Length: 82
Image (cartoon, rainbow, N blue to C red; front, side):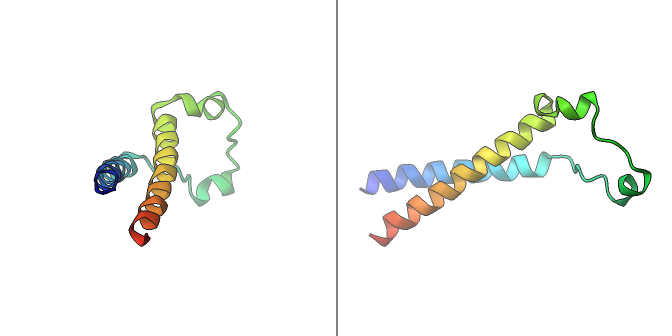
């Protein structure tokens, strides 16, 4: 059981570090109040294909790693409770 704890902790630390790095290198996407006032449309080619861009892939991996991080947190909590 100690080997499993060690492996899970190592994976947990790696996921946490990669998640921190991905979060820090992401670009702020919030257009702010100006787009509300000017009424800029988000229905263009770039917005439809945003998931294929570098930023879209970073966002997707951030979400995936966040889910893995939460699952590992719950798993480690269960292991250390037992």
